Amino acid sequence: MSRRERYREEVRQEAKAHAMAQLAENGPGGISVNSIAHRMGLSGPALYRYFPSRDALLTELISEAYQDLAETLESTAAEHRAAEPVVALTAMAMAFREWALAGPQRYLLLFGTPVPGYAAPAETIAAAQRALLAFAQVLERLPAPACPVDESFGQWLTDRGVGVAPSAFRQAVVGWSRMHGLLSLELTGQFALMGFDVAQLYRDAVKSVLNG
Amino acid sequence: MSRRERYREEVRQEAKAHAMAQLAENGPGGISVNSIAHRMGLSGPALYRYFPSRDALLTELISEAYQDLAETLESTAAEHRAAEPVVALTAMAMAFREWALAGPQRYLLLFGTPVPGYAAPAETIAAAQRALLAFAQVLERLPAPACPVDESFGQWLTDRGVGVAPSAFRQAVVGWSRMHGLLSLELTGQFALMGFDVAQLYRDAVKSVLNG
DNA sequence: TCGCAAAGTTAGAAGCTCTAACGCAAGCTT
DNA sequence: AAGCTTGCGTTAGAGCTTCTAACTTTGCGA
Image (cartoon, rainbow over all chains, first blue to last red; front, side, top):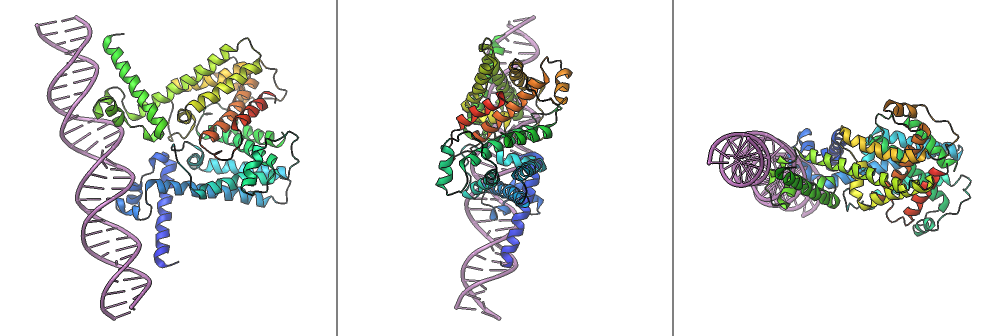
């Protein structure tokens, strides 16, 4: 990589770091290309040499967050490769929760309100699938539940040549939805002041997925 | 109500209707006081006689949406007052889903990304509690599950003098989180192109809550 | 009929995204 | 090494936004 390219990459990284800080502070609407540029000692439009638009910057943040999430889950799975599937899955679920709590607005950037009509780039979709399949692959090592699985679950898997049992995939979707349900309500403050132990509820939810 | 007040109320309603249309079309960020005013044949700042700020308008939309949701659930519960609890709860869950699908952006206005530090007015919180308690009250008529319930669930109920069994309340929270998990992922397009039957998954989720 | 309050207007400040036009500096090519 | 090209920064400015200030008109109530 040339000197120019390296410097360019540094500027891009710094801009994205500022964007993430603004995201954490004021939500997606609080991210301003202008103010990021000024905070970097640049004049307003200078950053448009690095990002074609504000939307493109946001899209990149989303994509990187997904990559980060997928890597977190995959590395947790790898760490527990030798362990019981139940142990590995529990660790992954807890890692997911930690990841969410570490950056609530980053989580909501992925799973909160999208702009209607927003189409994620292929890269982002791929990372999302990696995250989901990380769960499915470990779930596959579990004794399959007896209940019959809707055939539509297998279709998608065979279409893209993923070697995962439909029942495991279904279980991954169900588990994901239960984890997300609790995390989302917790992060958006819907449980505020209700005083119960959300972490305990989360652990119970994870167990409920694993024990049928 | 005087002629003046009635007209004022009409203008407010019309403005909110336009706001909801803009919400559906472009998300929360697409709601513009300016453009609403122009669309109503008014000049920009005129609407500020009716709403103190854009945020106040948004807050009012949120509050009304919550009221509407609570009323929907309560009336569904009332319609099934004589029915088996399981039937009533299933109907309420389906009504919840229908309500969400009828206005995805309205749903996400309540349960999507909030602006950090946003504090809902008491009115809104009350409506949210009504919605949750509507489920809890019917769940109470169900045979209580054997598992012990964390005492922290009872605390909140006794604090505000709600006569609901802690176990029913806990079940309502769990059920709510499972429904929301699936609805949220569906509405934000995370299941896009995966091709399985989300409605079926939702029905299964409802059953899983009711049958332990 | 008079007066006051409500509701509209325009002007304008401050912010945003993003384009256009221009200058300088660095790097690649000849 | 000289020159050309490309990249990066600038300012100016269009057009949008929220929202305040000041002024005018309108209409209700006494």
